[in-house]
Length: 493
Ligand SMILES: Cc1cc2nc3c(=O)[nH]c(=O)nc-3n(C[C@H](O)[C@H](O)[C@H](O)COP(=O)(O)OP(=O)(O)OC[C@H]3O[C@@H](n4cnc5c(N)ncnc54)[C@H](O)[C@@H]3O)c2cc1C
Image (cartoon, rainbow, N blue to C red; front, side):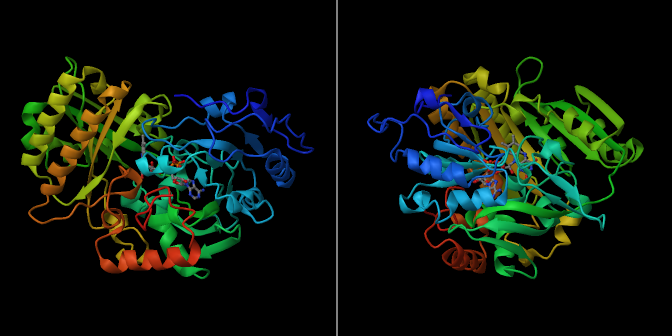
């Protein structure tokens, strides 16, 4: 993965920007090979003067930008001509505001960056813009009342008690699309845990959003949150930790697929078994004792797994690590690979469809053995009790009643495979959509968007949902500045 250097001598502007030294900028150095809108020195110096001491400006040639700011997928990614590591809400305001004006008056696009796991291809429409990163805003403060915490927008899942399953995506990115994770059966989806947020709008105005303040925007940012502004702080509900978690892992050869496909917590079709064959892994995770979990696993054990293991008395973080979703996992946290993924909701397992997916994966891993190692087909079946307690129309999250989410993830390094692997991904999507029955529309998860979905698929087929979202978009972001991630009006950027 390469970033085109902007000016080699300007690799890293500064970490403490006060006082700011103007870079040795040669206005005659033509930058159009990597920039459609070169950033003039006056912009950088004016912006630097407005930022707080802990903020940092990085240019594309910076080693930090080429390591820390790599993205999970390299197939279709945004490009930046400047990355601002903001440290305060005011830094965000300064970057967008009319005082700096440049970003707005020169149509320079901007994009918030949190855990850099957003993989939808629509993000690639952001070319040479300003990235606003929150790596310096990883604050967490439990409020005196004890059941709320104020979190900065830069925390990743693993830095917090995870709201989702994988540790590296950003908690803000997850919550803005609703989120999914092992805790949702207890308390609801990650986005349901928010009680208020601060949002900087496209014109640089910072506003509070909650049930009592900008209530419609509050509704919209929980489910379609990437479309309306930049979130600079959130207040979350916090809970007593569930101390003891159990896990049972059963691995089957593909032969038992038909029997293994019913009523599970989470199951995967894994890309590689011991001999490179496609196997089925059933993964039960439970916030309680193993003996109780075993009752759920028992019907599966009789099918004769080829491998099995169980754990008890683990913390939630340990359980996540066991699931291979921690910082050491190339699948969950590795950066810079070519990847494709999407999510499809459905209500019931359709074993004919599963068998078809199994054979598609078998063909694919035979054709591209290298892709098998980090390629999976997940079926996520998180508990639903906490999710359906939240009224369906109370947030912009659609499809609450759909308990299962199929997620193919393909990882590879040879770009010449892309067309074929994308075609395979789309074939799986067709199979999974048809598995719902004749005439059933596709139902996607915005956080697992591929990038070619119709807006209805990601935001709901009930007409009122998109009508409301589009009305709010016209109100809060009339010029469509926040339209790089699964845009609700269908037009990117
Ligand atoms: C390996 C992997 C594991 C995953 N695991 C889970 C999981 O367990 N549960 C789950 O629900 N989802 C999961 N996801 C999906 C995840 O929710 C989305 O990819 C999400 O967009 C990632 O957010 P991010 O902050 O890491 O990415 P980014 O690319 O940094 O952000 C994603 C989008 O959110 C916007 N955004 C980020 N921060 C802000 C902000 N402060 N204000 C406004 N907009 C902002 C960005 O502009 C971008 O458009 C996973 C994805 C991957 C690739």
